Length: 311
Image (cartoon, rainbow, N blue to C red):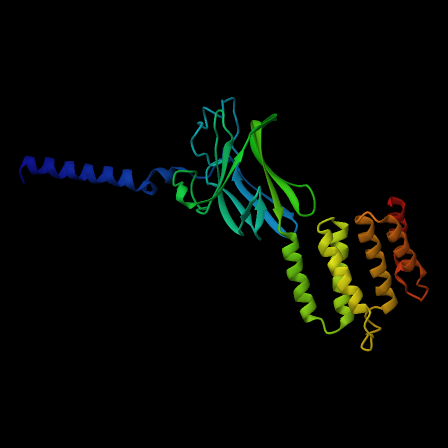
């Protein structure tokens, strides 16, 4: 074999070795990471239930380390993973309302585009399993929310929170450096509750069971101040069911006078919610006037008397 052929073969081997190193990083460089030391940006997961919806955020937590974050480390007008390493993931067990958009159940990559002057963009993208924002595809964006950053006390390590404001409402917050971003979130509690109620009523074998389900649902709406109209509708259905001749009343379930006392108490609460205090007090008198054994007032005296102090 002549010298020129040796040179050619050596050159080709070098070329293919270079290609392997370039296009197959697992061959060398990634093996150098031995997971010996803690991650510079550790992973965190937070969970919160809003209404009946389970919400979680899985994200990396970078630190400032004396750097200028926005406009430098994270450039303005460019997509940011809103965390570190793998994309930040928002996971919803049920459909919710974020700001004014209905966001279906599922997982989303959460990205942010910071701007120097305009409102920032918070983006939910359907391709949630990706490294950073390197494969970000705007065609897979499902929702985009304009959000004005707010000044906030210093946060060295990026942090998210899901803060309940009421049973069915809350906020998703991002804190890093000296800014915060917030999104309102609301579960579709009424839809979920009505679905549960319908299922229970369809399974019920007696009017008494149906009446109790409607009373309990009305009570839930009243106690959480969720839906005044539905509370009134449900208590009216319960009253109609209790007005029938209870020939099949199961005395081992609830005494009928106990359920009627519960009905009067919730009617009193609804009337008070409607601003009719006099009618509310009259309905409470009907509740307290039931004298049979195991009546609702006697068994719930402390709660009712406490509520009377409020009204």
